[in-house]
Length: 101
Image (cartoon, rainbow, N blue to C red; front, side, top):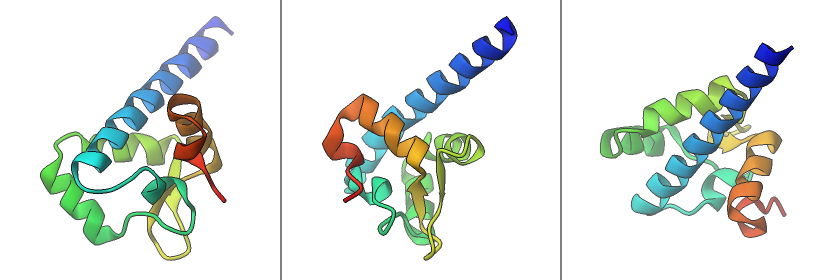
């Protein structure tokens, strides 16, 4: 039981670290948080490729977010945060960052 809780905390810490890095990289590359927090928006494959080229940590964080189910593809195939990912983003950056309206 102790091991499961420790693993869960580690995963949540990794997610939070990736979300913080992702937020910084988005801003550094001309995006806003709503790009990934709003289900109808998201990052296209071309935008993801540019981020991977311009930001060394992007690919690793994207993999962590997708593997942990904090990010997924929307109906248009764009990368967006899942409800869990938006909730973590909200906890970290406030209501405006995870506004889904």
